[in-house]
Image (cartoon, rainbow, N blue to C red; front, side, top):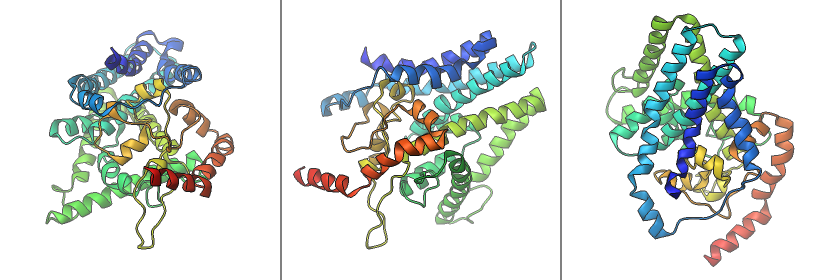
Length: 360
């Protein structure tokens, strides 16, 4: 029965179904679930540091149910997106209902779109990577699969990574730096890969960034053709909400943490204390264990259901949704988090970490 705990992740599409079906105040159901109900419940249920044994991990790795739970997000995301278009083009809705619908569908695009695409984008099979791209498309963030895998994982917790937030950097400044920087980084990475394969770095056919732009423009053109410019603008707004939800997660995951540059000019390997983690159960399940982020960076192809807790990993005092809300108020975030950054990057912590590593 423990395997079915991840069905809680489906409360996101359930909330969006309620939002679109009932309207009124219910149109904000996606926002209410993600940023009111879950943060409140996580004040009560703090979570566990339990890790699977090696035998349990082997068993869990081979269970198809965990993959199916991810795959089902593709028809769910596109189904509710179609329902969103249908609702907007039928009946009469107040401006605040439309705001609620768009917030809710945007949260779905971020939580069950980009987040699931993040997991599938690290898989090796062609069909899982295809599903990852399908989930990134409505967010207009297809470049993420390139930049995240080959940029973020290489430069995480360094100033070379646009998705690693800096100490005292407001989240609103970070949005611009990460969104623009990640997009430009994806072009650079893609050009280098294309050139290494013996083609011109900006070959229209062999550089995938060109096809990504074409597919995204085609998607928007189809929305405009069938539903008009007003729905097109709302579609873009929902996509922005979706990818800003991702960038908000990026912001809290690595805030102020930095890898040291070694004498040879390289950065130290990514370690478990270079990511902020949260063991709050509801957020972990809702985001398919994204909150155990240190282990993901340690071994990117480790499946979500077997990600581990590390005692030396910096722990957020709140779950991911509540931490995002706090980050939206920069003075509050800095006052709360900067002392914790100072501790996890201080000499005392480093000495204790070295002692543990020596004993191990």
